[in-house]
Image (cartoon, one colour):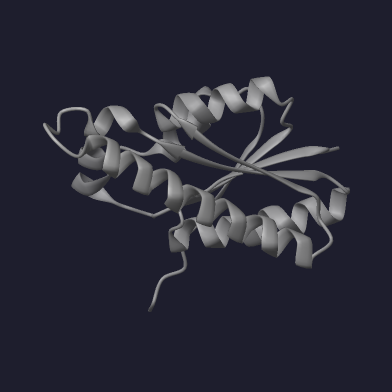
Length: 144
């Protein structure tokens, strides 16, 4: 049913929860896993000095985050491709889905409620609303 599964990551605990589910699904379906980290360089373009340094640091963070996915996938015997892209997160995810024939997206959600949700927006919510493929959302575990 699924041969290409995308797991976008930002290195957060919410992403980590989604990664576990994505690897499990990839194991079950014999699917290839794609780990994607998106650097939104436009968010830092207004910095007068140092924007390039910030973007380079984020790219490095992205390489580390996607490598953690690849390492976990390898330990489970799952093939994994890693990519660090630059652009608007939800658009880059949607474009990646189209360009790599992804069958399913597995994403973490922070579980924000109320005003925080509306003020901060949600990459996951935008992907859910605009994706042509199924999107599995995995809520970040709480410390309750």
